[in-house]
Image (tube, rainbow, N blue to C red; front, side):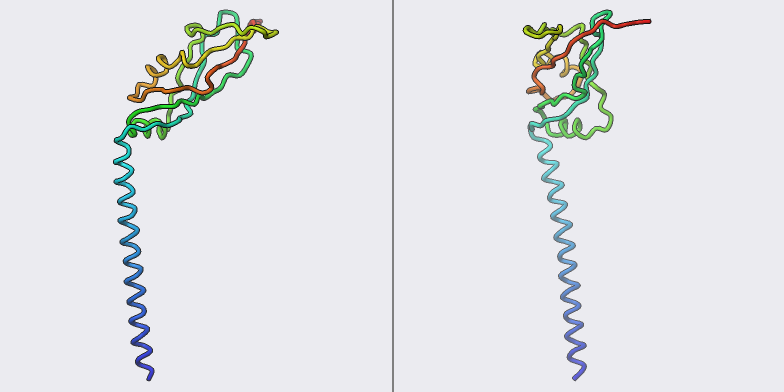
Length: 155
């Protein structure tokens, strides 16, 4: 009488082993299909937002910026998926440089201190050149940068 129980346990163990093996095979091929799908999607035209570091240089002679400008700009890019992937996941992003002496900033009217503003849509061509990518910049956020200058004091 004890032998049928041992036989049924052995069959149950084989079923569990077979089920586990099927689950492992299914998971492996599911993961493999995800990788192929992702690689296929990278070849298509995509649109993505990327926060990119910025450095500001060359304020007017004898002046310094008094307000902290954003250290990162949100770039909305459109281009091949592999280029966007590379930009998003590259570890060493060299900041794009905004040369204040070469951009077209304007005086803000209606402010007490001499405030200025810069519309970032005018930076698209310059930033695209610096990024050296196949992606096209659709928009930049914030769309306007506000700042002011103060005379530099030297000792």
